[in-house]
Length: 72
Ligand SMILES: [Zn+2]
Image (cartoon, rainbow, N blue to C red; front, side, top):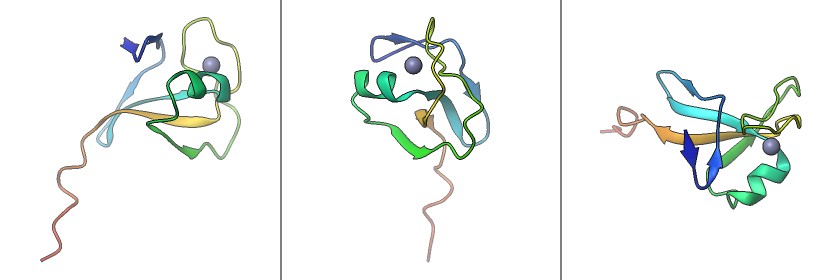
């Protein structure tokens, strides 16, 4: 998948949304826009194609949190 000009190989889809993980340098390329939360354990490689750095941030590509916002 292409996300903001980067080709991301390692995309995970679960009940929270669609996400991957990126290293510091790739996070800069996509402007940190959706790079939140530091990854606690540095055991993941960056999800961008041909990048072998250790990932530093979760990258939120698509969110599915439409159920959360109900506090009546
Ligand atoms: Zn990277």
